Amino acid sequence: MVDLQTQYLQIKADIDSGIQEVIDSAAFVKGKKVTDFAAHLQSYTGAKHVIPVGNGTDALQIALMALGLQRGDEVITPTFTFIATAEVVALLGLTPVVVDVDWDTMNMDTDAVRRAITPKTKAIVPVHLFGQCADMEPLLQIARENNLYVVEDACQAIGARYTFRNGHTAQAGTMGEIGCTSFFPSKNLGCYGDGGALFTNDDALADRIRAIANHGMVVRYHHDMVGVNSRLDTIQAVVLDAKLPHLDKYTAARQTAAAFYDNAFSDNADLLVPFRAPYSTHVFHQYTLRLSGRVAPLRSNIQARLAEKGIPTMVYYPVPLHLQKAYKDPRYRAGDFPVAERLAGCVLSLPMHTCLDGEQLAYITGNLLQTIELCKG
Ligand SMILES: *Cc1c(COP(=O)(O)O)cnc(C)c1O
Image (spheres, rainbow, N blue to C red):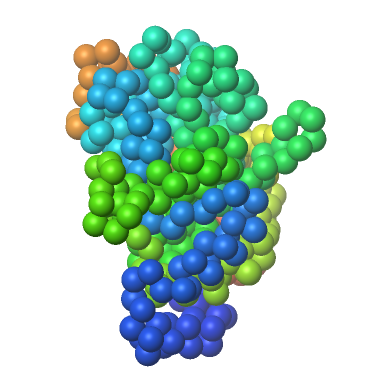
């Protein structure tokens, strides 16, 4: 699905010398490289504050802690996402309220959010799934009208740009009170282990986030609030700082691969290519097809045949949150979120990374089209 080795070889000299410097200096934690990288990511994203942490899940948890949410407060998330989005809500004793997604964008359905608001609702967590921004302008409007916080889960969408109706644009993760991203190796900006960051434009929130990520400590060994220990290793900051200058080039490579896929599949009645929302660029963390009703039941068969030809495929995500065992809730049952349930049954993600060449793309598309015909026959 990803090829991190080829990408590494292109920037090997920078990474190797940077990592060696960290080892020589022994500044493994809180080294200068961490603040350097945060400053560079700050100018790249336009966020006023970038606070590096241990991973994207921590970023989401710290965001909800920094907003001072209380046990029982409701947080609205899409039901079609990676589990981390709702996991942190549950871990903090908050109540996850899930909503359905839009069939085209696979992102949070704005009208469903409006209907899910109760007097206990405190925050909305839109997920910019697969690398395309959720429709933020109406979500921010709903949040303003109802006095809610917006925490963006931008773990899959670093570098995606949202365009507001007035023409103003902003990067994924910089529009809500807080944005969260992940530097997991396979993410669009990935390190060689775990990493993540929070974005905010609010000075007071930035201070709280920094303190919470560091054991709730403001003055050394004086703890003003309950915190966690979550930080980006200096070695990971070196990797990220070496990759950041290439991020736009990496994104362009993903978009070129996506255009190749689109071109191969767009007139096939059994494959629905990813929708491009007019208000957002798509940075293609994943290239996710929707299979037609006739072919969707053959999905695992198609995957197995492709695997035999050396072509990996993945189903992101096979089970929506409201049908996960750990998140069983008497309020929800099968059929409640029909779009998410239908997507779970028909999505198929193809290999997507920054080093796909024409030959590989032709091999993947040719085999997928052939396999579908074979399985149908
Ligand atoms: C990857 C991801 C996370 C979690 O990031 P980690 O760094 O793996 O903790 C959260 N939400 C979404 C949508 C993700 O894709």
